[in-house]
Length: 478
Image (tube, rainbow, N blue to C red; front, side):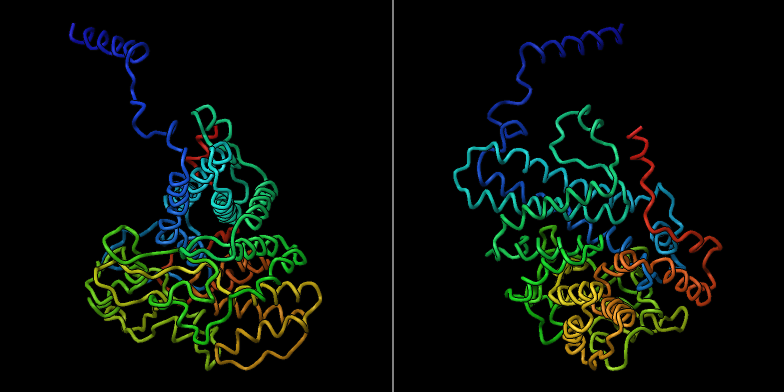
């Protein structure tokens, strides 16, 4: 009898909802009535930037930097619960890895928010054409950036370019498309962004015309369309960007968004949920409290990641000023008696534990110079390429590169990129683009196995160039 009464109540409530009740009062903000004013679209756009925070403090460095020969992890003998990250470093992950899933979902969260803006803004009666263009430009840039992340990591992914309005709509669009289709969409978005975006914004951190140009150049470089990449890079040579005299100033928390910065992920110290925690993540897990961060550290799976490899340390040329600016090599582990280097690029004095204001660079002007050098060399203009390479080397305190052979210069540019952008999530992409990933990582694996007697037999057993598409999303597609 009690069950029957419950059923009758539910049926009655459903009928009331259908015929009499206003479930969501019309005066409340909701998806149907929210996107009307310019201010509302600006807030929505801020929401489209927001997933970058989670991606950069968590999964991005795991699946980009640690995947490469630049960094690994410090074995934590006290806490063995960090297996998922260790698997990523050693190519042991399966298609149920939560961190890979988080990377996929984080990028699609951003894409979904951009789709809402780009679907609804043209229909809204907003008279400020300049502001509207700037919002469209930023949303187009962000959508292209999120898809660029995905296509390079997974290859085929769903291509969703409209707002999802129903469950049926979501399932009908949740089909993976060829990488070529994804790249066409990315290029279309960036060409639009370039026409809509200004050269500068008063508010730091927003995507500008320069950011869209270098992202599109990166897309063309990644797909070996060197001539097109050159066309997008050359205007940046005469822009307001330039190399800072001191390499370390790019990572000084007091000098963020400087003249070398083209696009960087913004973090803010304070009780606002916008801080970064790279200092803690990258500190040796057994280092004394206060040594690296100035505070107590967790000494568990919250530390000991992205540890520079001996392979990377050996790659620095004598006298390279970037080494001391990027890496601290003074900590000797009490557990092993060995030096444990750690990243210092993102270290800064801060007031609250695990909350720093260090930004994460995506594109710097030095990338323009090295990308242009690579494109020129690949199109047979090696002599013209060398001065761009040497601008970067000069700032690092190194002698000019003088040889003009294409193969030699190709190796020199790849090496320079490795050092210049160490710990900036560039190395894995560089190995993929240049077709050297399998060769380099096979050689790196042999060194790691020789140096680390704790690696499993399965470590580096299957050096994949693409991540496996998460099984949970495969199940949804089926």
